[in-house]
Length: 144
Picture 1 (cartoon, rainbow, N blue to C red):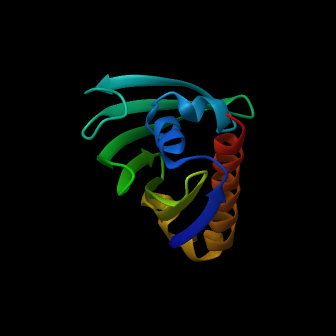
Picture 2 (picture 1 turned 180 degrees about the vertical axis):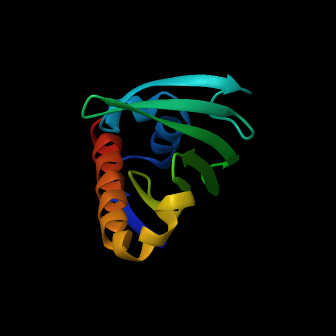
Picture 3 (picture 1 turned 60 degrees about the horizontal axis):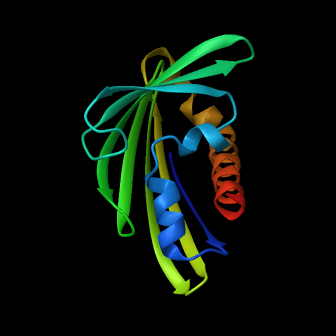
């Protein structure tokens, strides 16, 4: 499953880039994210690995994040693996003018193991969830 979105943020590119490069930023906008535990490398930099701990209605859920590339504003690719899934997000930034930045995000996800046969039925749900998460990120980038 592959989906992409873009949005204009009323902030200079440098400010948006700084927010996206901060490895603690997801704690400010991702619903249910309780903490981020760095495992290897410098957090937020290419090659680093962290564990994301979510509270999903009282049940802990863990994702392993690997920063694949860290070349903002050109691109930043992050891979997530969890029980029954893997997900990769590539984000890029473009300056529209001195006070406006376009954020582009491409999401590619796959169900694995016993979840894999459900992919066809869950495509719409994944698209909606990833769209909502992108909208939450953009709201944060506008407000922070």
